[in-house]
Image (tube, rainbow, N blue to C red; front, side, top):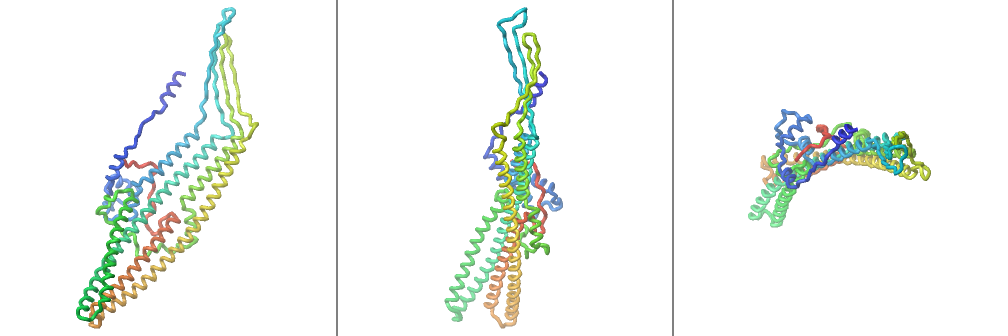
Length: 461
């Protein structure tokens, strides 16, 4: 008995304090950078080629790996999964037995019989009808749902990073086109001012061109300010401070045309989405939890039993006993909790059906938007090709002396305007592709698949 008590005492856990120090967390965040040795090891562990290090251009794959290493949302999801795993331990625990004792002293004794009576008894609870297994099945399903939601959080992190990176690079491309527009407007303005002095142009033409130049200059400054904010958004989406992106060269995420293959049919997209959506898999796991909970409540119709073996030494007389106790299900047979469990199961089933219907609608609409966006890119490129042909003809005429420098600059400005329309069409098509990826929760642009998400929490302190 002494040995058993000693071993039990040794197994007791003690409290360990772990206060949160906001100042150290702030300094740790500010020190994060893309040259971190831990990040490098993590990328190699995820299959990133070692011969590609150090990275010269950071694309979506590289920044996604950085986000998976640094972003706090993933640690939150992993911690939630660990909490669900801890609930599995609780569900699997068997009830502890109880012990009770008694000591009596008799005031009257005859024939030298001892005046003392003492006894000890145990209370051993016995769960019936498989309640423990149903409890374990319930929390195991909830733990699986929490594990799946790690992947859901990972996709959301990648999605936000992908969209932020696209907007940032689109802003840089717009700045480049606007700067070219400023140069052409300035050249045209100078030529018109010279013509105005020679009496060959009107002041209205000069004023309109000056306004267009000012508008283009304001557009450049506005887009530069927007690009700075978008750059900070990229850093935040990767779980990094803005300073971590200083001097970083980005790989292009805006393709010439956002095609993703000939097998992108509505049927293939719907099948891929319904098989791959993480929220559907999580919902199925939670439905299994409600099934197990219903089985548990049905099992609770049958009361548990408590066995009570005892020993009594009564003034020299030794007595052994075995007691049994249970609850009589006379007033109710657990009808209320069973009804609640059935309703919870029906609610989860209805929510799953609603989720599936919503996902099918998202998949169909996203595919239609992407196909329409791709068609707009093709039409815009045809317009650009026609305008470039006209510009080339004007350049040939200018070289032959049949067109002046003003006509050539205006033709180039028109081509630049069409090129801006092509850029907008490509951005819209890529955004539609991103929305389609979110509906499927799978990369569709030919990029590398999602890296494996480690189950343990990565310490970033």
